[in-house]
Length: 344
Image: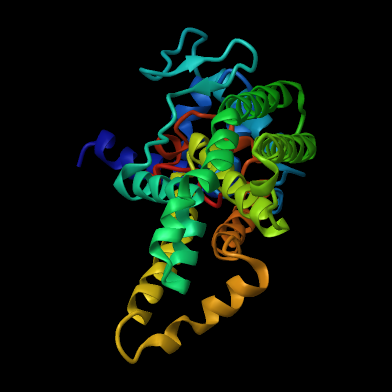
């Protein structure tokens, strides 16, 4: 047996021993492509966060937090690679942050698109249709559809541009926070109030447009219970948060929330249609009692408010993570093959 052949197992054993005694080296091997192409430690920290590595996990690598671990990985990769290392194809560097940016995947698919169309359509005519089904007043309900839909349609149309501005402002502020932060905890602390302001400003503008639209109608048709305003606010907040999450790669969460709201409204109408069959009138009494107490807008309020609140609870930890705004490909770096940041 030649010496070269016997040397290979010894060399492999030495490398395995080195990796075992140096856990950071193991991590560097796992994220080698990312670390060698990164231009900033925060870019690595964001990818590590997306891979599920928290400050507690970083302690196992003998570091106080993820950012400190990322700094060492960045330094080691810079020492191991030449300065002119080739960057991944399709990746570009954002001028303001130095983070790798790839086009986001925010396609809604058929289910998400149908949910959006249903929610908007129900927001325009659903309350009157519900009232008509409950009281068997088809002509009366359908005759009033135009007057009921006009304020909501106008408010939703007017709030489209502010919604785009709020989303853009949040994203731009997040990128500046990434550039000026020294830790992932600092990124989260900076982004929480920014996200709260974006959602609050959007909801306030939507309610303002709705009030203005209703005030412009003749006096006899302006009265609306609080539930009517709440239903439109819940619908707008649901669509805004869903679009914001989808724009940052969390498409599945956004589609699930909107589809759940659309399904709840559709099931309610299906129950009312079934209640019109002989002997099935009792099926309608829960919805009848609800609408008599709070108005027909109570159903879309409940259907949209619950998913909207769920998105709020999900958005604050998910959209204040550095990995939500580092739009590289952590999946390729970690080998997980995920389309969205893990744990988000």
